[in-house]
Length: 509
Ligand code: NDP
Image (cartoon, rainbow, N blue to C red; front, side, top):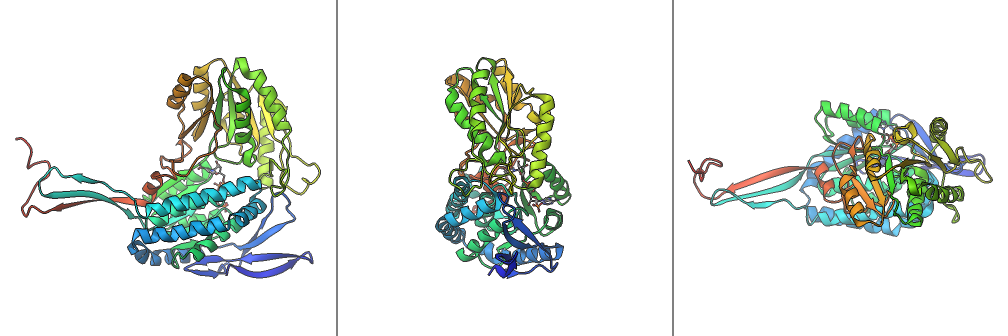
């Protein structure tokens, strides 16, 4: 299986080595290279060694996916859906084990890791159902004795490139719709979470996806990712990650006119109006800003507050943020886990320095190094007050536990601040005024809007994605996900037995 060998490290710790999954076989990389994945809460803990695949390995995976394509697309969609269903059952059975492995590898606290796996389960079952649905249109023709309908067809090999922050959910969001619609997959996970990806693909193998329909290639974005993006044999790519990476991929994919779905950065805002329930707002802000240590694309990093309630809100927020318990996510008492790696700590620290010059630091502000934290990438929950809407910390994605309070005079100024960023993923409003709530639903130019809830908490049967530089117009989850992985085919059947000309016959004149 995936586990290749057990090495002894430091005399007592065994570190397993894992393989690539190509054409239904677990194989070593031709490059002979491996890389390590480490626990961000305690970097002495090596999760495993993984193959550092190269362009040749990736080409083999693409070839395997191509070869598996014809049989897979001919399998009736309900039968494909049954395999997804079996996979969903296996994920359910393994939920706790997967969640623990995820917490160990990427740091999020265990209840959140369970939620991440649950999103995978939800999308597996939702898409299993699509095997028996996958609606097209059957519509009347303008001509007599003529039938008109549309059906979805698979595109081919789908390149799936994913980040580390939702290491089970995001690959499932992409692979489930790709597979149920009859595409085959080459999956390149983030190099920070190859273990989660390997466990996931092991379950897919167990569920009965035929050899070659799913291929796993671990390795760098520059080498594996690039090969997938450049390959003429991968006509559709789904990518989640940084906006800058997404833009580079878009430029290259455009040269080959590839279908490309991009889910990129966010700078999500919660608006607190003067009539809001402040306790409820503080709960939602704390969860949205510091959950997953701020490393969610939908994380709240801006609170836009009407001036009359600013002081009251700030006081409660600072108290709450300052009291959050940091630690390893596997410990039941931990509320905030580590950042993903040392580079992330440096990046967040650099933004805090920028923030000190732009606004007033009210809480946190540095790496956390207390008892039990010395071997991990921990950062204090941080709150800035008096931030201007166009300040750098209010505009740039920090991807860490840093929150900016932006005071505004009124609702109109709040709307301007919400929309004045390059991103447009998620937003929220806290108010008791039903008219204000409906105005916000209309005015906030983001792909997701919440009322009296934080900016996180998307459900898999609704479309997920954002406006402006958060993406390129595609949506994940819901029915919308099917659009990424299918071509529409319109079919006309004329049973009149004579030539009938659309737009000409049956028209006056
Ligand atoms: P990155 O863009 O660094 O990496 C994402 C994936 O792309 C990784 O698998 C990475 O590989 C790969 N990659 C890197 N360079 C290339 C390349 N040149 N060609 C092809 N693939 C490449 O993002 P992160 O993993 O750091 O994820 C964090 C980002 O993801 C944040 O900006 C966040 O907002 C965004 N995100 C967006 C979501 C959304 O739905 N809008 C949801 C979740 C996260 P490797 O790891 O080997 O470098």
